[in-house]
Amino acid sequence: VLKLFKLLHRTRQEVFKNDTKALEAARQKINEEFRNNRDEKSEEKINELLKIASDVEVILRTSVIQAVHTESDKIVLVPRKDLLQDNTPYLDKPTKK
Image (tube, rainbow, N blue to C red):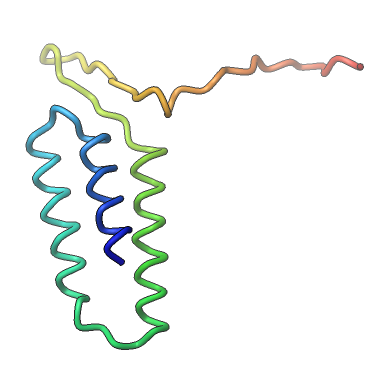
């Protein structure tokens, strides 16, 4: 449980780098969820909560992209390196090998 708690906080720091509001909101939410369930005794419920927390960490790490307002009508996306993937061009007719 502690390992997952720390992993969520590390992921939060990486995903929301330089965004103090998002960093604080995510910190509070992570701490609140773990605090609300700290007295849980059911092994089944604990495993379910750990699975949810693990899924949240994966979604944060793989799906969240920061955006910065540069002007009133413009937003610049700030993707992390681990989100960038090689783009494979679409082909109408696949080539035969």
